[in-house]
Image (cartoon, rainbow, N blue to C red; front, top):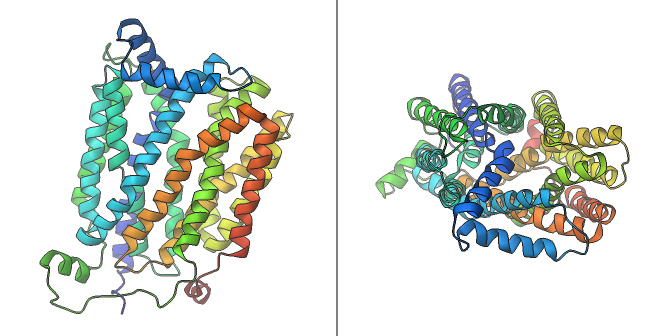
Length: 441
């Protein structure tokens, strides 16, 4: 037995709320990305000059420098801050991996709306701490709370699945993916512009943080006023009442087309190699072409813009398995090119292939994962799926950059290409199209 589908008008309304709120959330989230080098340099200079030698930041830098010195080749000092930013990014992803399954399971029990509003409370606390972060310890606390409370993406994915039938699922998931591409195209540029406006001497980045906080507050108010509950009402009522007043809606399939171990493993291995390559890209563009941060930013902005166009016009029309297949092949080809390129034309061609990957693989895997989850377990299953990806995102930069500095670009990208070919083997040889998608297509 399945729940009654929402009407077309109600679905359109909910999708609009999901899209606007997720876009606000991701733009706010991406403000900080281009600021990391200057922001961390500010804290390093502050605590190196005035802070105690055993401060949190100084202890972290000591460990990172020991790691850097272990390599046979010299690593430019300009990458000290990049390493610190990578360590914080890995910490954030690891915390997300821990929190995502719990947030998803809570949304199955108490409702998507309730879980999302509690998540927003954590986000508000996190960004408010960033506004007040006049020392690194406060900033670190902000990132820890943000990592543990950020549930918007996985809950948006679960809500999109709640209100979509099999035929609509792929295009709806592509809409969620488009929010990422749009936000990563414009959010970092806005953050960089706001960072030039100094309103609080003790925290030069308070303006960007303050606008980020304003966007989060607007998003929270908007969700509170306009987001209805998308979890099937009969289950929600049963969970709250603690009794079986009516038949429980159960949609567990008698079999799964793709096991969650297969889906999650594919997600993990893909993100492991993709995020490692993504993190190493600024190192490579600097080593080969002496790119500045702004030049690398333009390259990443181009990738985000192209990915958003592809998601809006192409990915949403593709079968999710086909989207994943196209994306992993494009990624393998790009990694092969990045390991051998000698010209900027080759670099931008490889970046175009990576934009195809960005616009297809994760969206397709999320869609396939949603088909294997019953309504009663969708939040938890999608949370677990995201958790595996976040573990890959935490480990990828460490593994890939270690290869890059120990063995060189050629070997690192050759191993990356081999790894992505292995992912392609899983995608083409093991993943299958759920029968409902074939019937609906």
